[in-house]
Amino acid sequence: MTTRYCEEEIVKDDFSFFKDAYNTLGELIIRENEWADDVGGRFHAPVRPIEDYIQYINENQIQSAKIYMSSISFLEECPSLKRLAIFPPVGFEGEIDYTPLYSLSSVEGLICGEEEFCEIDFSKISGLVYLSFSVKKGMKNFKDISTLKTLKVSGFKGKNRNLTDLFTAPHLDCLWLICCGVKSLKGIEVSSDIEEVRLDYCRSLEDISALESAKTTLRNLRIDACGKIKDFSVLEKLENLEVLVLHGNNSIPNLNFLEKLPNLQYFSITMNVEDGNLTPCLNIPFMGYVRNRRHYNLKNEDFPSHGGYRQKIRCPESELWRKWSYICEPEFYFEIYNRKAQDI
Image: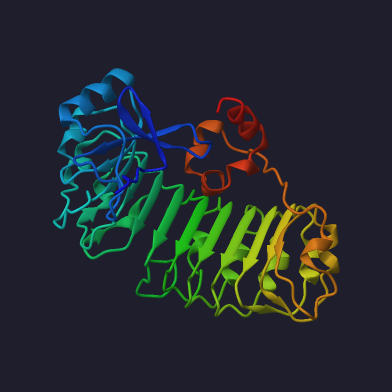
């Protein structure tokens, strides 16, 4: 039988790293067994004693790591690590003790919550700027992280079925909801800096009118498979939108709202446009995918500017690591993409 290896792995100094968005060196992989997944995939680099990882991290001042360990107590010996993705190792069915995070001076980024039960008090973790997690019993106080700027969450519902129980960070600028049970986006107005919102498979979501509170700051909005949304009238108020993606089986009366979005650079739609008139799309510099329908007056192939959009960089390059538009679609960042592509 042929051995299958992790395709996202880069080996350097006989240690495993994940590829970043540009296929260059990303996070160090810290692991206690050889398995890359639960279906037989393996890493090329050998498994090492935890002491080897600690030494390598400290000698090279490694800042980010993906950790597949049943114990994370070693983190106290690695002060340079600031961005952590913590997963249970393949075959491990116990609980990970997250309390070592509480004694660290600063954790800028944290991905966690893949295990069935996850007991963690987020208010005891210092310096969180980026948080990605799947809601589980035992998680406490994620609402109270005042330093948060990027939040990616799946499985959140909340007592009020909105965002008032999710976050109170006044400077949150990136929000990504996946399979969340909220019915409205009420609570998003807590932050005055919302720039990017992504809504994926939130099948209970009906009301997106609260986005109006971010009408001057919101630049990137993506809605995918949120089938209960019927009222899209708020879109015409989002005057500074640059990227808009409307994917799903929803219906929208017309695309007249596009004329009120003077800064829109990229638009993609698979939702049904009831009046069939796609002419407003001709004024969009870059069109993404358009699902062809019989009653449309234009087809996907009628838009010669398909693709090619390059997003403007408005934050320091040192902060791009936490922007999901940069992580998921690096080619949107023209300057960095061209520079790093030459290094591959």
